[in-house]
Image 1 (tube, one colour):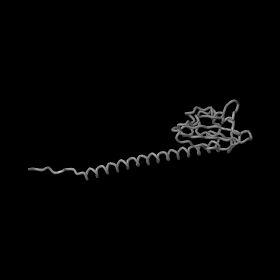
Image 2: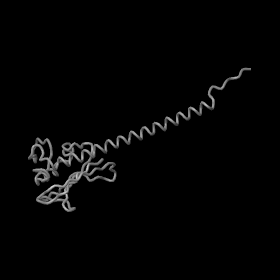
Image 3: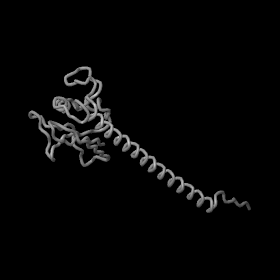
Amino acid sequence: MRYKGQVISIDAYAAFTIIILLLAFILTNWNQTANELRQREIRSEITLSAISISDSLVKSAGDPSSWEGEPNLNMLGLVTEDHILNRNKLIAFVGLNETALKDFLGVQRYNFYFRATQKGTLVNLDGVKLSVGPYPTSSATIITNSQRVAILNNTYVNLNFIVWR
């Protein structure tokens, strides 16, 4: 009489199951870690963008320095001199197309919101409210606010530049 041998034992099934579970655990952790690193990178990029943009807006007159209405605009700036805001530049800035602003500011992949307030109230120059862009929604995952203080008409103005995703 001929007996067939057992090809795979219970020990082999147990070892195979443990290896599969271990691989599943490693892959899950790998994906989670990769997502966390990606989120940190995006958060750092958004924070750096918000800080550098808000700094350049209150420290630079732009290029050309009288860029309002200029078709060949290279860089935006809102001041006539360091932290002294220019009324015409502020009005022209909030009047620009949102897509064009995103391109000039280098935040094409994100949303941004800008507002100028004085004592908690939105600044209104010649009937133009100094606010542009959509305010962050409840679905925003990353929000960075960079605030600067500047002078407009001999009074302090708070400038908030929010970059969000």
